[in-house]
Image (cartoon, rainbow, N blue to C red; front, side, top):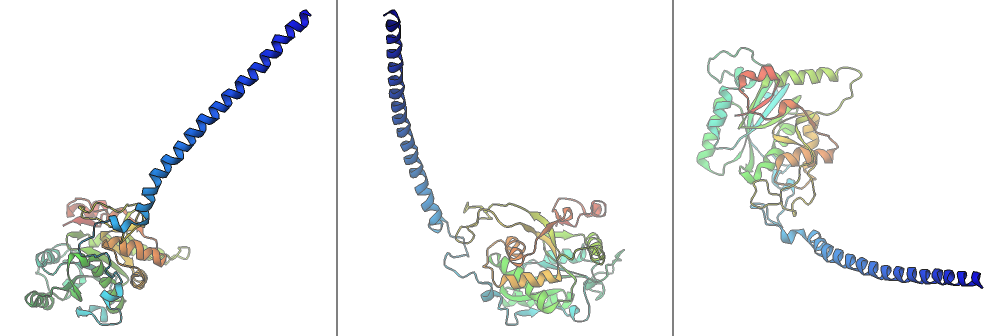
Length: 347
């Protein structure tokens, strides 16, 4: 009996313990279920508005001035690839093969900037030296087969047009294409550059795009390109089209409509831009110029010309832009360029 008295409470203890555990598990399950349901509801409340925001981004974007929401962005309508759009063009490409052709994008009214460029970094170029169109100042090391031209649009003003024509007669370095020269047409201007080179100066080995607020160290750049050309002659070198400049990777579109670089989603909906080269200055081999020009006729325009040409059109063509430290636009005096191998500086 004593043993039964000892066993009985033990069995009861086991039974009571098991019942207690079951109750606790049931209670915990009920609590966890409530928490789980609460989390699901919270997530639904959070993600449903976010989904609608992503599904209808255009309704929340401020319209960019000059780029209407329902406007056309087809390049062919602006550059008219099947028509002659050139108003003024130098003729040196007909008789020469430029090793380097530098195309400076310039506004029609920026004649003082063009004058300063002719008197400074472009003074040693072939386009000015051979035609004796600069002062008699002696240039220590004139460059062979390096030509500098200025790309302008149509001012839509007869007085300004007369000034441009006189400037062209005097210096012979003006390229004028038939598009309205405005800030909103900077991307169109860059595509017109590609068109003019493709149709009028396809003999150029290398082509540089830059702006009239940038200085270019032509001597250092020529040495770099000569080295590149020499490397292509080596049997073991893989022949890769050249598109080189200051490489920008992983840049995100700015959605703040008050920012100068604002990019609405109805124009570019991606989270990041493709890798591209800064528009302050980049160099292309001739085959790249032609490939980008062809691609531009299939890729919709966006306001940022460097992202469009060297990012989107390059990606469409399967061309990968590459970076070189010489294209970084730092503040440095021209006298130090030969020492640090830099190609660009602010003007």
